[in-house]
Image (spheres, one colour):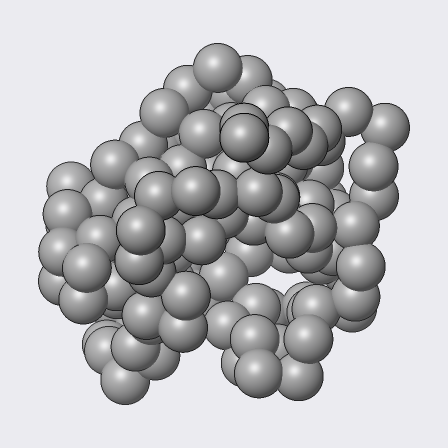
Amino acid sequence: MDEFGTTAGVSGDPVPDQLRSLFNHPDNVRVQELPCALPGFGSLAVHFGAGARTVPHQHHNGQHLVFVEGVGVVADEDGVHVVRVGDVVSNPPGAWHWHGATPGAAATHVTFEAPGDFDLDVERRDWDDTYGPDLGT
């Protein structure tokens, strides 16, 4: 039997304790579990308030992001990329990255990844310097 879910009109739940260290402002982020019948994978909608984003991290098995609302940002080895509704980002296994909302707009993405598969023990690199107030405008 297929399972169905939606991100439309849903604000999600507070970030659980085991994920709080992944975000710069966890109280400005909401998460929503979504159905995922793919073996070994889980799916979440992550609702970022303006200015909220993850800290740099990596996923040993990769991560797939689908932006469904707002204006977001994804940074990787090649720089900082502004993303919008309908954009899909596929992070390969072990790739350094961070993502979230721009300073002036909220964003929501749906993620597909192995649950708990993130490593925060990575370099910050340009995380502090590349997130100016005009990003995404």
